[in-house]
Length: 228
Image 1 (cartoon, rainbow, N blue to C red):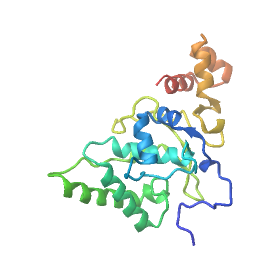
Image 2 (image 1 turned 30 degrees about the vertical axis):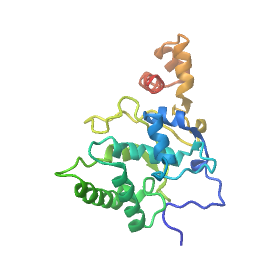
Image 3 (image 1 turned 45 degrees about the horizontal axis):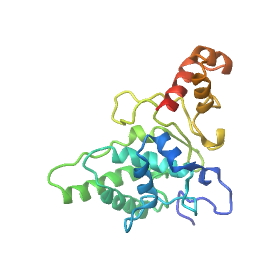
């Protein structure tokens, strides 16, 4: 039986299709481009944190985007080094028998606690005192999953702040769905870039809301997403 989280290689899954350039993905996730490339490609002898679904190593899939989204929540906390993160993920991968712990449903439940437990051991062994361990719930709560497989089907990217520790999280209005708008950010099925282009051309949010039959809040969130 294959490990949980693995997809059938004979089935074309849009979630694993090479879709986003590194520059595009970095903008959606509000990450520095070199950071994202480091995580996905490694650097010199340093291994990547997650594997790309694109054999040519030029594009990220939706799954890769979700992996980077979760990893960003880990790395934005101070005191947690990437080597410790990588070793803690390897530990969870083996203990939970999953190929991709950052996107697997088990990481949101038991795997998350295993990860934090191992991360604490690794980090505190190399530093004096306690380290700031990541609270991953804000990041994980922005992922919708397939009820049958537990795998991600939608991602709600942060549109107002990349600070996952904010007491009031960003609204879940802008969504990335690999089956809608080629996986680009959208509101109500309308790509945020389309709304942004019309706004830049002079259309008001109220006018756009009437045209698309959307709440003005959704239009404003689409503009905020593209203006970042």
